[in-house]
Length: 74
Image (cartoon, rainbow, N blue to C red; front, side, top):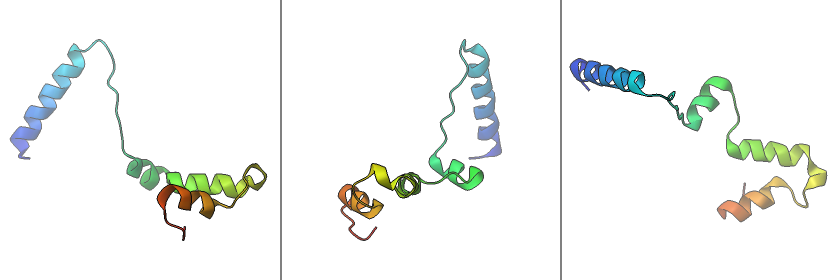
């Protein structure tokens, strides 16, 4: 994207924000939280939950992971 197009986009975006009666919603992918906030991936979060609460689960994490992804080695 050229600098001119970036400026056009920025101006149009700011105009739409100013004209709106509601604040914008910003959706950010999980890579941002993983990289900058050290938040675990979904798989690691679920794995940690199963490992910390073994009395709540009949099987170890690998069992549940393999049922979900068909990968019996996780």
